[in-house]
Length: 213
Ligand SMILES: C[S@@+](CC[C@H](N)C(=O)[O-])C[C@H]1O[C@@H](n2cnc3c(N)ncnc32)[C@H](O)[C@@H]1O
Image (cartoon, rainbow, N blue to C red; front, side):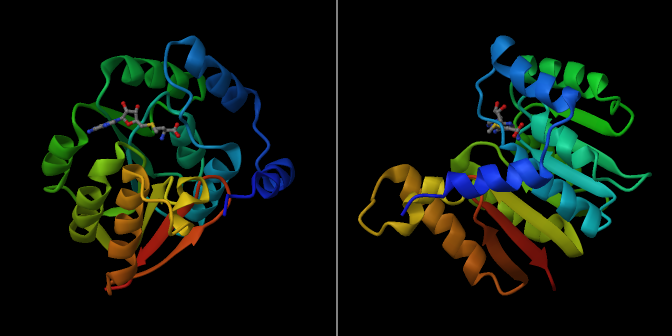
């Protein structure tokens, strides 16, 4: 089974039309030497809908890259909301800062440079987050999720990108390491009784888990 990208395109054409800023940021990302591994427009728009629907005020992103997903997310914030976004690579963070400035969002976004696992230790002492988007290195996903279970408020939302691995997770014959890892992560979330969770199947699959207790 493979993800149906024609469905993604249909959703994008209806709801996830980029404005000139998002288009520029997406096109700029490879030109500035960053890999083009950002989310797709319909995934960004879906995150924005979730952020707005949950009235999230204190939002965290793990894996900034050039700020493309961060712009979608920050535009969904309530007026006094804030996005904290974590990035290992200083060059990625510098490009993201330029892009957040272009989007007029610097007052709503804080970029923390460094290994997210260390940044999360520091953030543990602050108020709980209402919404988290996990999109950094895949081997870290389980640790990030465990951290979220301790640091996301009740009623808060945890999301994670690439959880379908282009549909490969649903193919039992596929035993590649990258697929096994994501299958294991999805199972951990499915077995976690304190969340109600599902996968939004457009794009490369977005995990959505609501912390209910
Ligand atoms: C898939 S990209 C993020 C894409 C971005 N969310 C978007 O859609 O626009 C993953 C990013 O996570 C960063 N990253 C990888 N490991 C990390 C770590 N341990 N801590 C913080 N950032 C990390 C990478 O440098 C890269 O910029």
